[in-house]
Image (cartoon, rainbow, N blue to C red):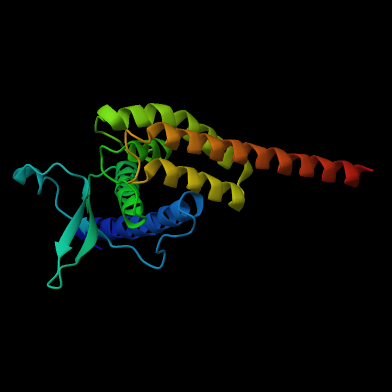
Length: 220
């Protein structure tokens, strides 16, 4: 193989590996956050191979983007485009993939999904997905009140790795990310989120006690 052929092969292998990574992360989101409600049989994601600096000449600095294409019937379809060149850092590409898939997962589940929404920032921080905007106003207040609750919930989820726990964490995410949340019902939303967290703690205390009782029974 020539040097150019080797480079092309390596780039195609990276592309294939990233497509597999994207589907694995999508399934993780489905299991951990979204009640197994995401369509997991395929992803509208394209990894576009390009020569270095092609888009920089056009002053396009995006590492990836979500595109909406209108159709004749008035609907539209979505395509996530991730840009890959021979000099791209794979960790950064994976981070971009996570960022765009978080947008998509929130979008298809009917939750708030923009770069300026509190729930998007919370999930970006949870999954190290390069949150780079600045939120303000209502969403900043929602973020500051909701983030301690989601941090606790994610810690519980990491410790227990239990489908019931995941379902409760998902319920918390749906509550905070709902398009119905406004300044008027903010405190009601936070109280509902706290109740979900309290129920989660009660459930986890119960299963921990059951494990301890089972261990004692086996020792006796």
